[in-house]
Structure formats: C-alpha cells, structure tokens
Image 1 (cartoon, rainbow, N blue to C red):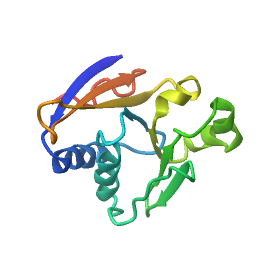
Image 2 (cartoon, rainbow, N blue to C red):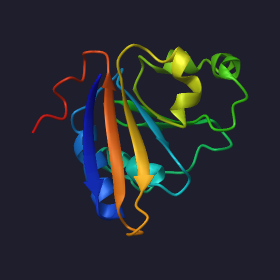
Image 3 (cartoon, rainbow, N blue to C red):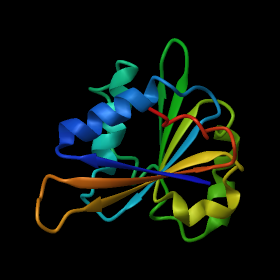
Image 4 (cartoon, helix red, strand yellow):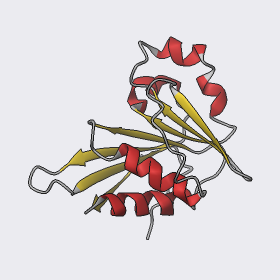
Length: 152
C-alpha cells in the first residue's frame, strides 16, 4: 500500500485532479471513494467523467446502486453502495462482474471492501474546518498495479 495526499482548494481543483487521473486509467481499474456527505465525491466523479466527454450526464446512483456510462472506448460504472444492507446485496446485482469490463468508481466502497480485487485506488475525502472550499484527498493504492501512478 502506498499513500499520497492531494490538497484541493476548490471544486474545480477536485474536478481537474479527477480528470487527470481518468487519463491514466483503463478497463479493470477501480476507484473507491470515501468521506462524509458533501466532501467532494460527486465533484470528483463529475471531473472524471468529463475526461470521457460525459460531464453533462452525471447523476447520483443513490437509488439505482450503479449508473453505467458508455463511451466509444470504455465503459464507466459509477456505484453508490451506501444503501446496501450487506455484501450479499452487491453479489445479488452481479456487482463483481463489473470489475473487469470497465472502470469502476465506487462511492462508500468501504462497505464492500471484502469483495474488491487486490488492486484498487481508495480516495478518502475530508473537509477542512477552517476553509469551506478546501478538501484533503488521502489516496491509498492497494496491490502493486498503481505503485507509480501518482509519482510526479
């Protein structure tokens, strides 16, 4: 596991960070987003999707569990597993079958941690008590696949 930190000074910063990360990922990549409500997970996803020209299509998958976005080259699956009672519900929707068929962005992914593959990226969003626009993104890479992804 490797740890990185990114300080975002605005929603635009968060979206730019996500856009740049999207340019480096492909089928089979998984990003787990954690953090309290309003911490920036949806803005991250919006920035990520904008790399693929999907910035106008984002909607929260809160009630659907997963939203699917198709591009010419890649599928992107945006999960919100907050409402799942347990991991069995994730299996029931065939959740693990998405892992190898596109890029998965999983909000509240810590809920299904036991089903995640060895290699994934987890980004934990924190608000700053003194600056309402500042966000701290604590990034951890699991497995070896992403060891050099965030090297500058």
